[in-house]
Amino acid sequence: MTQTLFKHAATGVLSLEAYSPGMPIEELQRRLGVSSAIKLASNENPLGCSPRVREALAAAVSGGDMARYPDGSGHRLKQKLAAMHGIEPERITLGNGSNDIIELLGRVFLGPDRAAMFSAHAFAVYPIITQAQCARAVVVPALPASADQPYGHDLDGFARALAAHPDVALIFIANPNNPTGTWLDAARIEAFLSQVPDDVIVALDEAYYEYMAPAIRGDSRAWLDRHPNLVVFRTFSKTYGLASLRAGYSLSSAALADLLNRVRQPFNNNSLALLAAEIALGDQDFVEASVELNTRERERLTKALRARELNVLPSQANFLAIDFGRDAKPVHQGLLERGVIVRPLASYDLPRFLRVSIGTAAENDRFLEALGEVLAA
Ligand SMILES: *Cc1c(COP(=O)(O)O)cnc(C)c1O
Image (cartoon, rainbow, N blue to C red; front, side, top):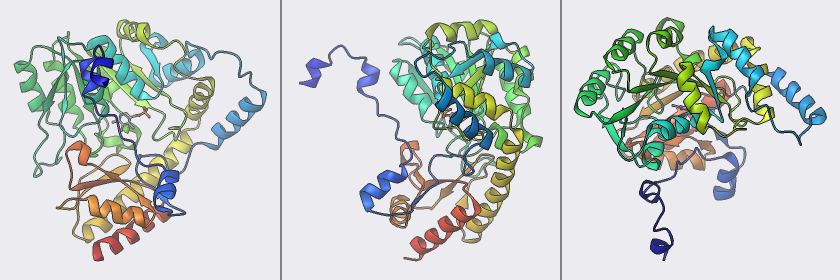
């Protein structure tokens, strides 16, 4: 029945599996009747967002004119981002979350006769958009478990795959990567960029950039001037704590931004998201406090888990990937029953792993306690 009904649907879409997000707290309450659950499943900021954003949103909701379309050019937010990055506003593209940027890139650069390249165990949205565009996926095997960056991106492998697959139009690199938390040496990324031909677009996903230690962050802003085929994107969903509002952006050449703009929905950012992002940028103290908490708790949690002989991947993000050495499903289930929501990684081809977002100290303690019970059971 659906076979004839959807005869003309894109073949990529018909065989696609939808993205499965972290379980919302309400769903756990509905499913298992567990109350006062905590969610450490979607890499959200446990401190919420800047109090200044709350104030500005409250004022905008009570006094704003909801009947008006938002500023489709995002003028004010772009001005702030331009000043922050030292870049012309014409080189900025705003997205409904940075997922929107990934989709815009796919729509512009991918199609049935082209391929996208990304690492195994990389962010799930890359294969989804690739398949939706009926493009081919060139999946580069990840680094081995014994590497410094276990299961991380292998840029030498990327370079070899690129030489073997001339139909690659778009390369996704996540630094740090989700769900592994692994990262890339800045010098290595720069060297790779010089190996990529100009007609292949490199999309550098820096969703967790702020969480990286300053000493190992790359200056991707500077790379843009030397590599017109580079597009770098960041988000307000993670460190800025605005995941619910959907705002992200990319930096690129003005010509590439112009292409993205042609397929962008005219009002892809709503007024409240634009306002929240603009105000959030002005509160770097909040960002600093968030990063500081994350760094401290990431280290503490890593130590506590390793003390239990668990294999924790190194991470420069706001989450840890833990290898349980066996199917992690029962551990996931046990944690759910104790009101702790984490992320299984079977869909990332890492069935022995769970990913836990770094929460507040109290949330992390609760996770450790629940995990102790589950592992002892
Ligand atoms: C969370 C995340 C994003 C950002 O998602 P938004 O759409 O901005 O909420 C992008 N890339 C990676 C790797 C992520 O983990």
